Length: 201
Image 1 (cartoon, rainbow, N blue to C red):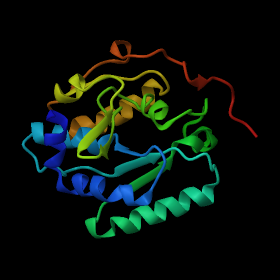
Image 2: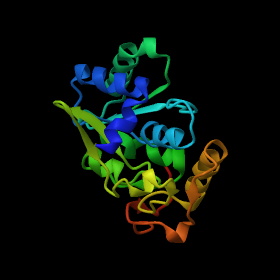
Image 3: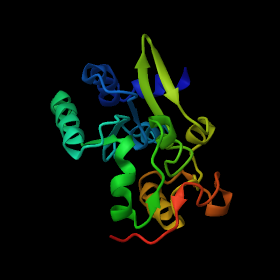
């Protein structure tokens, strides 16, 4: 599999995939930027792990307490402490609880980790991977063509143009060969998951 072969080049990412099963997290994936940016690095003849700001570990636990998520985050960070990476650990089941405060609008609760990944900002970064036996299990709702073709296409299901543009601007500075498409060239239905009501007490 082309994706597995490419990700194996990022030794840190591959080591994370080897270690994270020990956490016994429900429905977990390693995904988003660390996956896409490994591919972009290879395409730009960079070190596979270069310019990757963090590694996203996501899972789905019906225990919605902040304390439980913190415990999981601490355990995950301890597991990879020697790798010297920034690890972002998220229970996707509770994202809707803090999303309005961070982004200014409400979203519907996710029903699964796969549901959450399907709303991530671009088609290339809406991807999660995890080991399954000796194989790599992949959740990529939009496929991997955009990823390998260096196309950054907005996924309009949940985000706003401003959020997407800010991310794309940061990426373009690091990976200049990316082909960035405009908001209207994106996929999904604007506002499908957003709840356009004021965020208040």
